[in-house]
Length: 197
Ligand SMILES: Cc1cc2nc3c(=O)[nH]c(=O)nc-3n(C[C@H](O)[C@H](O)[C@H](O)COP(=O)(O)O)c2cc1C
Image 1 (cartoon, rainbow, N blue to C red):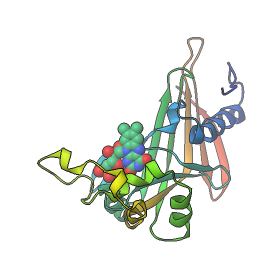
Image 2 (tube, rainbow, N blue to C red; image 1 turned 90 degrees about the vertical axis):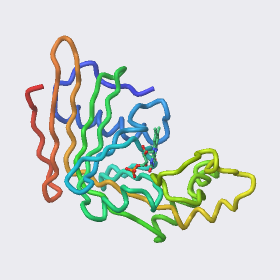
Image 3 (cartoon, rainbow, N blue to C red; image 1 turned 30 degrees about the vertical axis):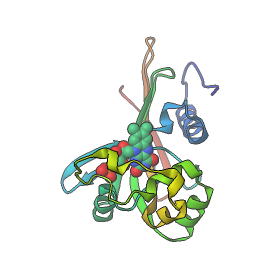
């Protein structure tokens, strides 16, 4: 269970709490930020979807996400790498909004390592014969028969997307007074301010 302040007196506390939440979110499935919403551009339109956070490097401010290399988001991100990540935990009463850009990793060291560290049940999804999002007549024909597939075949459809954030917005809803702060890294220098909630 995360131990977080009841009151936020300083900007540092808001950033410290945000980083703790993201660190906890990687392993803790009950942490709502384990499955935040990732938004990217699809041409000039916004496209949002829920993803699972698989890794976090707080020094590099990078969050690791696994996906199918055939999915729409890979094409979209390769055309425009701008992205936001959003989550709200109603128990903690905290919303985090991160803005940054995404690097795609396909059949390189980063993808290799992530694939080797993935559980068998996660690898199975990448063996589906057709691309995610393709229109089909009968979904029953696309159920994964995990006993009769070679799980490692899925590696050719596996990609890692690393989301690197350069801004983090924290919002804490509390009846005695909401607290909202923004932390921006400009050329690695951190600039933090309070905002009107
Ligand atoms: C709880 C949950 C977790 C999900 N995790 C992922 C994930 O880690 N990676 C992923 O690519 N899609 C994940 N999805 C599916 C996406 O939300 C989305 O439907 C899919 O990636 C296709 O998105 P796209 O067409 O924008 O590429 C998840 C969906 C849910 C509901």
